[in-house]
Length: 85
Length: 540
Image (cartoon, rainbow over the protein chains, first blue to last red):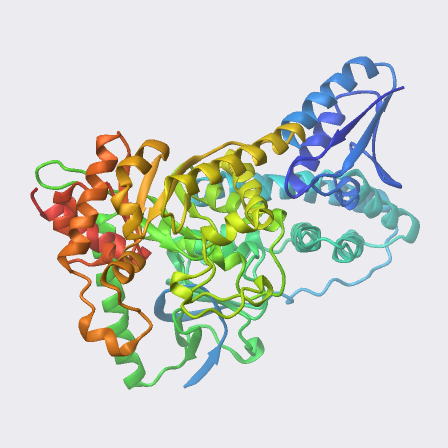
C-alpha cells in the first residue's frame, strides 16, 4: 500500500467538478484508492461520497492506494491533486 | 391589475405575456413490478438519454453563458455516473420490486437530503442538482417532454423555481424575463439571468395555480415589482420607461468596447470607483478599464469587530478575479474623520478631518495594517492588483510603510504562503504631498489625486460645514495648479498620475484634465461612458 498527504488549496474545497474529475481519474486504475478526511473516508471513484466528505480549503487529507498498479496510481494521484485541488 | 413584490436579480424593465411553468404536473406513483430486469433496463436507457441531453445542454451553455457557468451540466453528467446513486436505484428496484420512476425519485430525495444536512452552504446548494438530475431521469422514464417554448411568442417565464437545466434549455429569444416564487440570489437561475441580461425577480409570492398563460405582465427589475394585467395608464408609463431605458442602453452599447482616445490620438484610462465587491457588476456593465479606487472601508464598517485576514483575502481575491487581468487599485483602510467605527476606539477629536485617520492609524497600530497587507499580498496572486495608501504627507511615512511591507513579506515567505507584492502608490490629498510630489514620485509607482480632501485642506474649508458652501469653489485655480504640479512630477520620474476624487467626474473639466496630461480618471461606474464620449469628441 502507498499513501500521501495533501492539503487542499481550492477555495471551495473538494467541490462537485473536481470530485467528478477525481472519480474519473481513479477509475483508470485497478488499485483501490481511498480518500481519508478526519474520521471519514470515501472511495475515490465515488463522486457523491467524495462530496459528502465535505473537505474544505486548508484541510489535509490522506490518500491511500492499494493494488497492482499502486506505484503508477499514487504518482498520478499526486499530480492530479496538485493540478486540480 | 395585481402588483407583487420580489427581489430583483437583474435590473431591467419589460412588458409581455406570461408563460407559466407548472412543475409538479407529474406525480411519481409507487407500483409493484414483476420483472426488475425490465425496470433496470429502462433506467439504463433513461440515463443514456439524460446523458445525451446534458451533453447538448452543456454545448449550448458554453456558447451562451461561457464555460464556467456551463460546467454545472458536466457535473450533472458525472453525478449520473455515480456508483452509489445508481446502486441505490437498482437496489430498490430489486429488493422492493418497485417501478423505476419511484426508485429514482426516492433515491433522489435521499441523496438530496444528505446534502441538505451538510454544514457547508456550497454543499447544501448541491441538493438542487441531485433533484435536477433525478427529475430529468423521471421525465425520461415517463416519456415527458422538456418545457418547450419554441411555438410561443417571447414571454415572461413564471415558475415556482427554475433548475439550471430548465433555464438553459429554453430558447433565449423567447424569454423576456424570469419571475419565480423561490430561488436565491446565488442560485444558478439568478447567475444565468445576470449573464443573459434578462430582468429577473425571485421570492415573488405568486399563486401559480390561478395564473394563466398569456396574461400581460410588467417586470420592473429596478423597483423589484411585477404587475399582472396592468391598466392603460400603467402600460403607457411602462412603455415610456422601456423606451428611455432602451435609449440609454443604445448610448452605452455604442461606446462599449471603444477606446478612450481623443480625435487627435491622446489616450486616457477611465476606471471606476467602488465601495464593495457587489459593485463590480456595474464596473463591467459600464465597460470601465479597471477599478481606480476600491474603498476597503466597507469591510470594516457596519460590524462590531475587525474583519479577519481570510475575510479580506476572499473579498480582494474575488475582485481581482472578477476583473480578470484589469487593474484593481485597492486603497488601504481610510477610517477616521467622517467615517467612524466604534470598535476602533478612536475617541473624540476637536478636528477629526485633521486628526487621527487613515495611514496614521495604520502606522500607529501596525497589527491592523499588517492583517490588511497580508490579505492584499495573498490576493495579488490572482489578478492585476495595486495598492494605494491614503493621507500621505511625507517620504518618511512611505518609508515606514515599506518597512512594514517588508516584515509582512518575510512572514509570508517563512510560512510558505503564496503572495505577490503589487504596485504601490499613494493618494495625493494633502498640500504637503503636492509640494513634495517630486520626491514621492521617486519612491512610489503611481499617484492618485483625492480631490475632495485636497480641496478641503487647500482652501481651509470644512466640507461638513454648510455655512461655508458659498466659499467652496471646487474649480479654484489653486487646485488645478496643484493637479498640474503632481502630474508633471509623476511624469518627470516615469510614473503615472490619476484623479479619483469627485472632480474626476466633473464633465466640465474632462477636456482640461486630458490636456493637462492626467493619465487616469476614476469615477462612479455610471459616469464612465459619459466621460468616454467627451474624450472621443475632443482634441488636445
